[in-house]
Length: 100
Length: 100
Image (cartoon, rainbow over all chains, first blue to last red):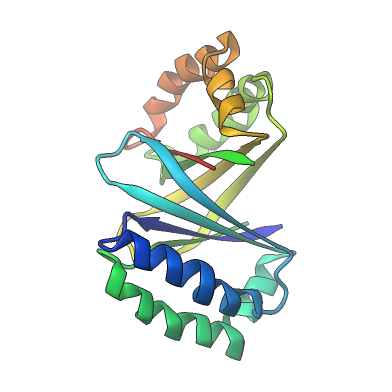
C-alpha cells in the first residue's frame, strides 16, 4: 500500500477554504484513477509544533507505482491546477508526503 | 473515525532508529487500547517543503473520545516514555496531529 498525505495549515480564510475544498476540490480528487480510499481529517490538536495545522487528507493506492501513474494522469493535472484556487485561502502550499 | 498521525523527520541515525522503532516501539504502541488500525509508511518523496520527512505513523480510533481514553491509558504512558529512547536517533520530536 502507498499513500499521498496532504497536510494543510490553518487557512487565512477558513470558511471559504472549507467550503471550496469540500464542495469543489474534493470532486476533482475523486476523479483521479487508482484511488482505493480517501480520508479527510480535521486537526483538533497538535504536539511538538508551534504551527497551526488544520486538515490532513490521506489518499491510498495499491502501490507506489500506481501513485506514479495517478500523478501523471490528466485528472491529477486538474487537481494541481485547482490547488492554485485554494491558495487564495491559505497561508502557504500544503505539505505533500508520498509514502509506502 | 479519528486518527493520531505522527510524522518523523529523517533520523540522525537512520539504521538504529528504524531498528528500534520496528522492533521495540511498535510493540508498545500495539498495547494501547481502542486502536482499530495502525499504519507505518515511509516517506519516499515530499513537496512544498525543504525539510526531510522520513516516516508517517497513522493510528485509527473509533472516535476522538476513544483517542482521549487511549492517551490517558498506562499503555500510552509507556509509549511516551519510550519516545525518549528514540530521541537519541532523531533531530527533533515528531509532529503529532490528532484529527477527526
